[in-house]
Length: 532
Ligand SMILES: Nc1nc2c(c(=O)[nH]1)N[C@H]1C(S)=C(S)[C@@H](COP(=O)(O)O)O[C@H]1N2
Ligand SMILES: [Mo]
Image 1 (spheres, helix red, strand yellow):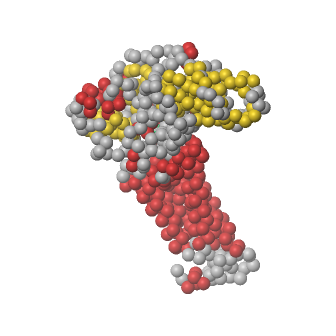
Image 2 (cartoon, rainbow, N blue to C red):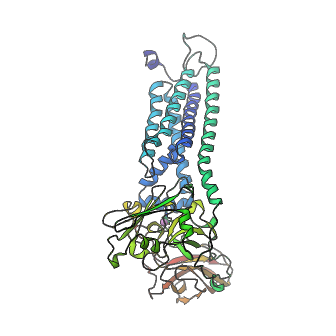
């Protein structure tokens, strides 16, 4: 830096174009990173990588809060947050470049280092190549900033032109506008190209999903009993449609896996015949079809992260037995089954539960179609009675038999429980909180679940009145939720409705309120309504 540069004072008029050059440099960095990510791997882009790293490091309480406040939009909010922070830094670097041109450009490179570190340390990282998008992006951004800041600097020798001047007298306004426009256009082009390249990688996966013809299951599910769905407006439908089925995962970009190149490896402790299966290997096996209700451990009392679907898949226990796996109760050395996904998720389930006769599935179909990408195409696990974070690995590619002592999977490392059977829960779907029904008969209705135990009774209380038994809809299976309803003669005023369920072991749902961490929320769901 020359003496001259140090002495220069920033003129107010220079600030807006300087800030603009910072933002343009940031845009160029992200766009070119996107282009390289399109060539390398979409997941290696800096925003996705930093977002993923942030998700991995978010304490359970904060994650819980984010899910509670933003729901499934939490990822969008996170990415917008990252972009907002980057924009702010870009603005500041742009202004700083007026005085410290080289240092500001180096500052841009620093962001590249952060992105590269995040991308290479993600559990799904494929190695040093994942650093490329961030590094290339940062270099382009630094160059753009350096060049634009140069255009803002005074032309030398200093002239005494009359123009109002950003940097100083006689700045190269025309040069700045031309360079800025060129940078913006090139970046937009690079970004768009990167997006379409990244999309191309997913096209094979989309084609492979379209080509899937799910065979008829050898063991079809019985028709859902006619009485399983009550005709009460506002109640959750017995079967949750795929497009409204809750989604909870750490993936900022939904993995698009090509079923034709997909493989599942089964190996580990006590696996006497390790095996690698293709998608077609699975489809050629005996398929079973079952209705199973899936629940997320992050579901608050009364929350939405529960859904019921008709799954088609391979019975996992049979496959494990063929590989020589025995459950601990029959002398097997492994008590934990760790499922790994293509995006580096690890999910641990008790081998005993998976092999105790329940319909633990390697699922390929959901409600009559191949699994949607968001729900794990081509293959995921579903185990009745266990929360999703200890059973329902999506985009699965590896099953390792190990022990709970030897290995802690992703969520356990973050403070969640090693073992987590679903807790008995019940929810009031209608009336909604703060509804204003008219006095007279009001239908109170909802769902209750205690997967693999079954629901035997649901009771409702109005204010501090007596518990009254609700009508239970017909049971589909003990692995599914059950609808219930109760007509209530509503009287004017504010009332609190509370629900509780009893499972088939005879145990009443506990009223002890606990948070979701570490093994699922408990307590009774209440809704306050005002009757007019
Ligand atoms: N690969 C992968 N599988 C995953 C997860 C994840 O983050 N990544 N989340 C689990 C959790 S916490 C739940 S509750 C279920 C949710 O499945 P769904 O999104 O199909 O409803 O998926 C499980 N499987
Ligand atoms: Mo979950």
